[in-house]
Image (tube, rainbow, N blue to C red; front, side, top):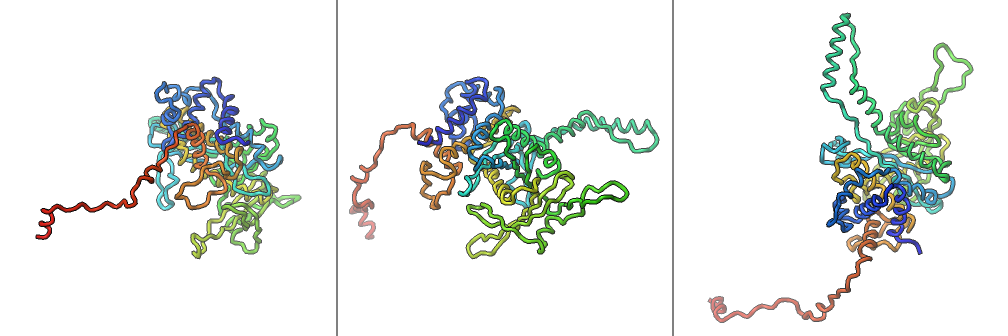
Length: 512
């Protein structure tokens, strides 16, 4: 008999997390907080988790210090996902698909360590709003049903890194440097411009900006995941295929990829590309050329009617579809370097109707580059389509799990509390896959009465949380059966109220 969702989740926590903590009592506190945050309603705070586990009348100070003072590595909380990954892939040689993206957790306090002012992702495109928040870079492994069955993928987070901006130095340091530059110019007296003298704070600020930029944090996450895969024999020889958006498709990420790693990302429609350098026995005066003739831009390739469209079968929006694409390669891009041939894929905008019989509308085209020109075209397009699952991760984490709602100020707690919540979310998704597969089985609770639509083929996070709460609370509480049939048996046939008889005085008053 297969294990239930609660039993499988407890096995993953006991077997995967216990070795990550040096003390058993710290593990027990983390375990209680994890279950409390998952089953709590409305707000997902530490206080709510304590109340959900029935410890509100005991000393809770140690529970608040578990994310700020206790020594434990958040990366090891994602090890159960990597340990179970070979069994979730279709075959022993399948590559590991990974999605990379960043998100902003809303905050209201300006004194929280690492808080920054960023663009509100929910603001309309015609009016950009700003908000306070914490930036996190997330890496999720994409698992999908075995070959021949098809279906939507499921994204399991394996990294969730805090990416705060660099702290700008005070104005006082800049004013002192300006005075030093003026004194140096007066001392020379030749009227030549003098290069400004940078202070130690400004030099450290520039180095910190390089270390904390989002592409650098994303590249560090890729390296960390690659090292974790190399430490496991079943994942060591598998290629790692990373899908990212345009913010990570740059020189830093493409040229800094680890070994046996492929990157797929969006590129600008006006990117300047080059053909391979033709073989020439001799060259003219000057430096030898490194790139061939200029190739058409991705937008020009999209509009070029002489290039044929290729139909690629891809699972998207609930079914297999034929997606028209154009493929050009190998080509070169200066940001990728002369030793990195690329494959350019142009995806035609798909048509859709917002309602039956409505006007046919078109989505935006997609321009992708791949660092491996020999990669299968079906796998390339499917890997990028599956990347949408990481956006579903962000929605679930912030709307249903309350990641970022914790009211903490300690720098370690600000970083590790969201990582603990995301790790528990990843283990819950993994427990659902191991217990019931990719389909929504009969063990899940039925939909509410007001949901007239049929349930989806796979369980949502809300389905998992409802089932987990049912197994934790409802099945452990034995209440007597209460019947209300007596009210129906003794109820009168006519429940309409009758009129009261009028007195003689009232009748005379009405007659007058």
